[in-house]
Image (cartoon, rainbow, N blue to C red; front, top):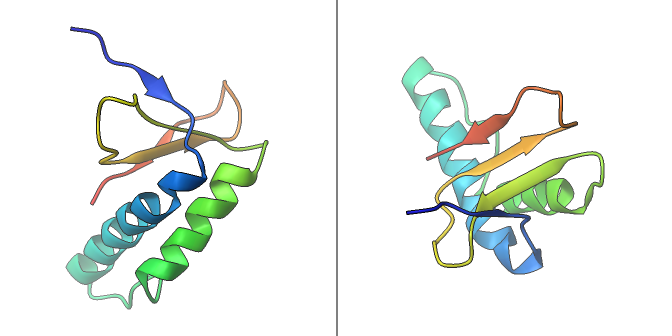
Length: 85
């Protein structure tokens, strides 16, 4: 069974914003810090920025799967960063 990755599109902004918000909220709560993002909407603005920047390579699971994490890297040689709620 293969696994495909695809670049995110504008239709993915809301779900990616939720993933980013939930992931950072969970980390902050575990360490007793205030959340990095005030709301899911702020996470969606970050997702929209990542999706729109050619310098950031973001990718999601293929079309047959619902996104459950968002991954990004600034170049093919850079370390990949993933956010999972």
